[in-house]
Length: 61
Image (cartoon, rainbow, N blue to C red; front, side, top):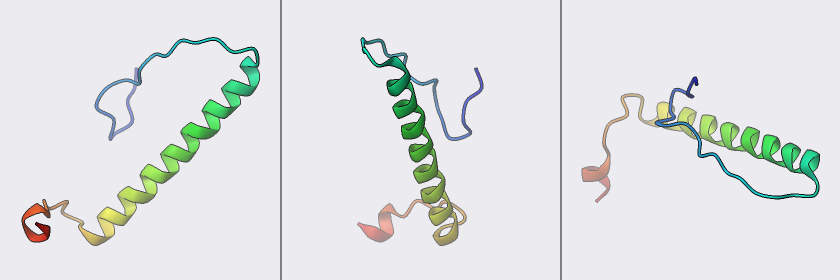
């Protein structure tokens, strides 16, 4: 299984029951796209403000 560059481990496998499988699959797919977009957007912001990914804890604490 190929992992996203920022992913540490494969996604959890969830099981459940639904009477609207097709609708649930679309909700899941749309949710994953939104999460990926938000993650990419956050990474771009970090790279712009902190391109070396320095630990900012000491400066902010």
